[in-house]
Length: 268
Image 1 (cartoon, rainbow, N blue to C red):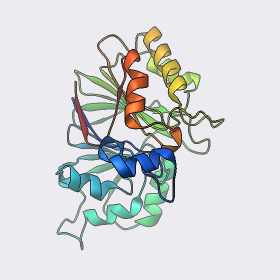
Image 2 (image 1 turned 180 degrees about the horizontal axis):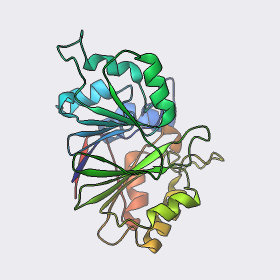
Image 3 (image 1 turned 30 degrees about the vertical axis):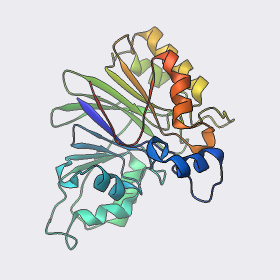
């Protein structure tokens, strides 16, 4: 299995709009891995996770063809993950396609939004619920409930292909006990986990800072869900986290954690 980290930034990206934060200014000057578009990913070239406002740029930058996607998985409806206007370009009159080449999997709130916006469009939309696995092609996909939006069933995804197991978690917060209980049944080959607050912890409990990240990771290791061969990476970094890419690398290196960056392809 492989996962392409198309974007690894928070809601306003790095550098952020209208920001003179230290991290934003550093990214403008040094570019490279410090430039972070809004978080999104692609599994095995066909399972697209989230469709945010930077999708076109990410596709063009990485030489991708969106017609290869067979599934579009939405984690939740925040604007950096869910840009529904972009879906119109998948069909006529913007091309010759009468049906989209992918199935949309999303929670009930997003499904309602899409049906209201595209009432007569030929999209295949499947409602997902946390802890209810579904299959797509050769994949078993289990949505887990993220502690992020109290008014919405926000998802993290365990994706299994019969050989390898991946957990992709953005906007996780510290999971509630039902999610921890569900995670106990998995043994992961790869863990992608958010670290939005970086080195600047806040009172908000819908994102992780570096210390909360390590706390979550420690519990996963104690459970056996994460083991010595699990690849562990970060994503969803905000400029407000007050850490450049290299500063995050230096912090996480002793803990066996790699810092994700835009365009990174991880194979496991």
